[in-house]
Image (cartoon, rainbow over all chains, first blue to last red; front, side, top):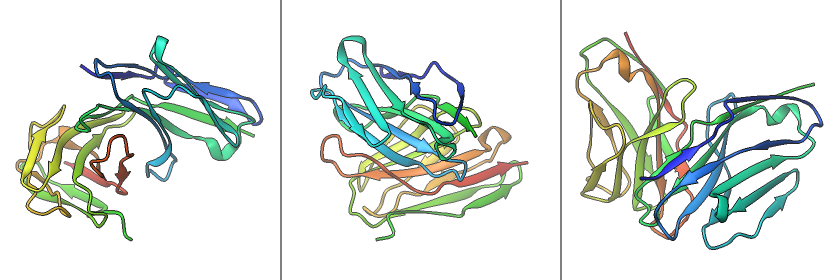
Amino acid sequence: AQKVTQAQTEISVVEKEDVTLDCVYETRDTTYYLFWYKQPPSGELVFLIRRNSFDEQNEISGRYSWNFQKSTSSFNFTITASQVVDSAVYFCALLNQAGTALIFGKGTTLSVSS
Amino acid sequence: NAGVTQTPKFRILKIGQSMTLQCTQDMNHNYMYWYRQDPGMGLKLIYYSVGAGITDKGEVPNGYNVSRSTTEDFPLRLELAAPSQTSVYFCASRTGTSGIRAFFGPGTRLTVL
C-alpha cells in the first residue's frame, strides 16, 4: 500500500527564517512520482514541483529547494528566507507507476509572521 | 484554456437530499480524480477514472457514485447526503503520460445539515 506521512502538523516561523517541511513516503513501485502542492488560504491547490523516483538530483528554484533521498524514502522541502506570503498548507503527494493513485499526506500548515 | 472547472462553488444540502457535483476539463486528459478534503486533513481519493467509460473506487467511495461518459466530464453523485459528507471536494485531471502532474479545479464546498 502507498502512504505519505507529513509528521509536522503545524510550523510557525518569523519572517526571514529558513524552514524545512518533511515528507516520508511508502510504496512498493519501482517507478513513482512525488509532488509538492501549496494550498494558500484562498483554498486552491498550487503545484510546486514534481520529482521522478529515478532522478535523485536535488533542485533549487529561487527560495525553494527540495531534497529527495530514495534511501530514506524522503522528499523534503525547504523555504529559505521565509515570507508572510509563504503562509499556507503544504501537501506532499505520491503518484503510483500506473497513475491511478495520487495519494496525499495530511499537510503541514506553515505560518510565517512578520 | 479553462483547465478544470467545478460547479457549484458552494452548496448547502439537507440530510437525505441528493446532488451532483460537476467537473469538466478541456485539456483532453485521460485521467480524472475526485477528492474530498476535511478540515485539518489531506485530500482523500473518492473515485478515479482512466478514460471514458472506466471508473474505479479510491480510498473513501462509500456514499458516492461517478460516471465518465465523455473524456471531458466526470460528475460525482451524492445520493443520500449525510453530515459526514460535509467537506470540500476537488476534481483533478492529468494526462496518461507517466508522472505528469495533476491539475486541480477550484473546489466545491459542501455542507450537509
